Amino acid sequence: MPESGVNVSFLTKLNFFIRKNSTRNRRFILVAGGGTTARNYISGGRGVVHKINNDDLDWLGIHSTRLNAHLLRTIFRDIAHPRIIENYERKIFNPNESVIIAGGWKPGWSTDYCAAFLAKDYDAHLIVNLSNIYYVFTKDPKKFPDAVRIEKTTWDYYETLIGTKWTPGLSTPFDPIASQLAKKAGLSVIVTKGDDFANLQHLIDGDPFKGSVITPFEVTPAFYDRNYYFGKHKSGTSRLHESKNAMVQASRFLAAWGLEISDDALLLAKKDVKSFIVRGDITNLPFDNKEFDMVVTFNVLEHIERSKLHHTAEEVNRIARKHVLHKLHTPDNVLFAALNGRDVSRLSVYNKGFWNELFSSLPNSRILERNFHLPRVIETVYLLEKTK
Image (cartoon, rainbow, N blue to C red; front, side, top):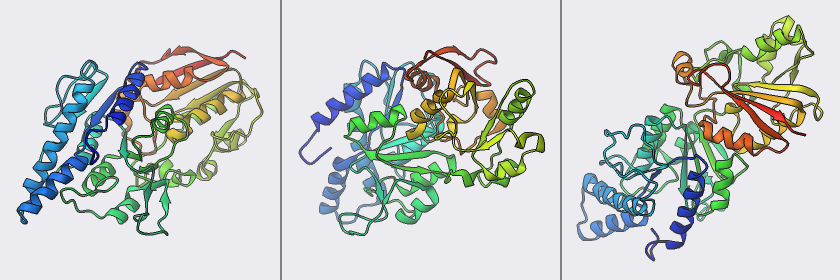
């Protein structure tokens, strides 16, 4: 809340934004912060009683968040769950509503930490932190002209900027204790300006956006090294070779090629596979328009940054003449996840509503079939048909 009071203009835009997206099968958990209200109460308390313990300072902040949460609950009353989350031991199971509202819980827990806890509890892999800035900087850009804007970073580096200690009323893009939980849980956080709703729409739709992305690891082609493929990577994950196996089987009957971004994977590939693999990046495919009758991706799109998803899906469509098949990892694949564990290189694990909308928005194609082979607890599959 700004110094001038409730920001009606912002809340009106937020109301429109959430309602518009909730009609597109998107669901939101909104965690209200204390903001200026909390800082004013903390400052006021310190101004009268100079020595206040951290618990009392935290409670001033917690009640400020709950007041803000109740305002949000009032605005979204008809589409929000009736209970505001204030006790995080009381999980809301199988909610039907499009919106869940949460406030602060107890001393020592900032609302950033609450958001990270909820993301972990509800198996949401991404937190969008609405701030008053588009980007995280290496230091305060208002004080230091040489401050460098950060578009992508890891939790390890972010901790070097903000430290590891929490104090009530601390103002950082994402606080230190919450950062430690997000790092441990393998969560990604996007920090961006909260009042630019056009930019937020780009972010949600999988288009390029302005904002800082903080991830557990730096996922580049170098991430997929020998240790990754042998299950010894520091991320604790390993990668299946199902796409290569399927490609080799197909090549016995058809003219088939595979694409690989990792130099280590190419070195590790068997001799009967190497001749069918091309070094390249799915975001910029080295093939001509409509070069292939069918293009297949096996558990690839979830490894692409959200801001590149729409472009990537269009790029795959570009080289297909008849059909595109995407096998994806989604939150519905609970049995697959239980058997294979969590892979932090999956940057874009989203529900079927997100993928339905993304694939439906692609020009010159339509969704022909979904989940036509195995149940969704194991895999999520989309078959697209080119219309032009």
